[in-house]
Amino acid sequence: MASRILLLAFLALVSSHAIASDPSPLQDFCVADKTSHVFVNGLACKNPNDVRADDFFFSGLDRPGDTANKLGSNVTLVNVEKIAGLNTLGISLARIDFAPYGLNPPHIHPRATEILTVLEGSLYVGFVTSNTDNRLFAKVINKGDVFVFPQGLIHFQFNYGTKNAVAIAALSSQNPGVITVANAVFGSKPPISRDVLAKAFQVDKKTIDWLQAQFWMDNNN
Image (tube, rainbow, N blue to C red):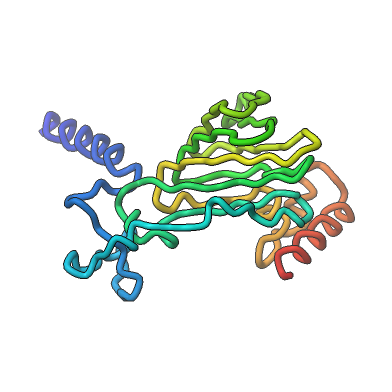
């Protein structure tokens, strides 16, 4: 009996690791059927006979994103919502444009590792490890350089230069998700109690009120 329990525990552990990322495809492709009302982990498949080349196509990454905003950056994400053929393939892509001193602020991709390469300019990039070390790995990278951000860790990219910068990022999920730390903490709906935030950040409640007002204003515009 004890050996059976150990075997079951081992199989459960192995299974949990096996399903810890996007599901692997069981056929050549599973183009997302965006009209389907079936709820699955991912998106339901379109009939293969109805699949066309355009289901694997996206146009527009040659066009710069609009960086005329407070952060001076713009992310053009090409995920399964943009290319239905990415469904079950476990990958997506993003173009990131930076104005001078533009920032892609500290954020998390809960479902993906990211690998980024600079096409133009230079970027100061980095990520922070989990508690309790909270170690920062950061570096200035230039045109042609590549940097990796492990899945689920807070990371950022900053254009410290006086010229525009452009980067391309690949992510290991058809739908990597993004949690911008400041937006989530100070702009949640409904807002997190200011008592909680004041104690967590060791600041007074007036500071929390001001921060929440800023992010609520931004998130509702």
